[in-house]
Image (tube, rainbow, N blue to C red):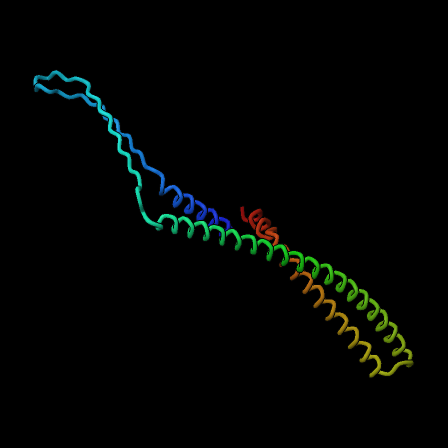
Length: 180
């Protein structure tokens, strides 16, 4: 938004500089009651004045200022376009990353569920004397690793989704609705 306003301001400055070569015409009209003989006879008197100012020669200063203002406006427009492209690219990259993280979080949940089933089976085997305690501990550690990996994947997904909402401006719109 700031870049857009800057561009508009610089475009207006360029138009002002271009108008500096045009003549300026001032018209002044005066109407008043006045007395010429000091006897109290007041008559309506009107006058009109015209003032014309024409720049005859100013060298290349006006042209240079106009060109500089136009160049600054064009540069601001280019910066605005570049910022829009960068924002669009950031949104696309973040969206694709969110899709990948969503799939990864789903796989991590599936792995955690399988490890939970494996641990329950190992616990039964251990209670029946078919599995040793070190093997049961190994299965438990694998379950905990799978659970932590699932938590990390969910965290990364949530953070990326928030980033996407912030990039698209939806996060701010939602906050305004809560506050306002």
